Length: 124
Image 1 (cartoon, rainbow, N blue to C red):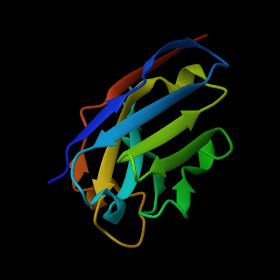
Image 2: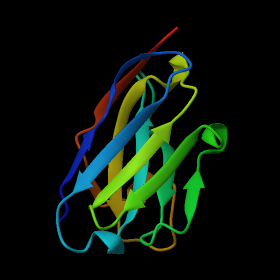
Image 3: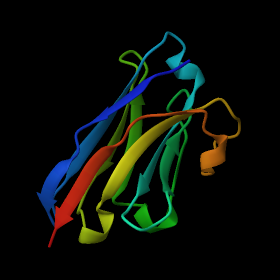
Image 4: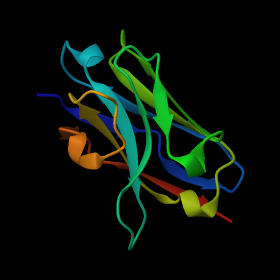
């Protein structure tokens, strides 16, 4: 079992940056692929980014490449999402998730554990 707790969300203006964190319980954090997903009001949940257990490989949603960066610190059992040049359309609840599936995947059905989410609101 893995418990995930997100933090770092908030209300920011367009063009600002935010860094989300997701703290995981347990001693086997490095075994999990970690992902970030988001869900905007009235929309389906969508993939944002994911990182391998070692942190050496990451994948991104095509529309977010270059603005968002995923990273992890296995010593701290934490995964991060650095979000730059935020836009109003980035407004959503952001979730982190853990997966035991290999290879790294953007499919949410490959993720076994989910956090409660953190709200990010970007004003224009």
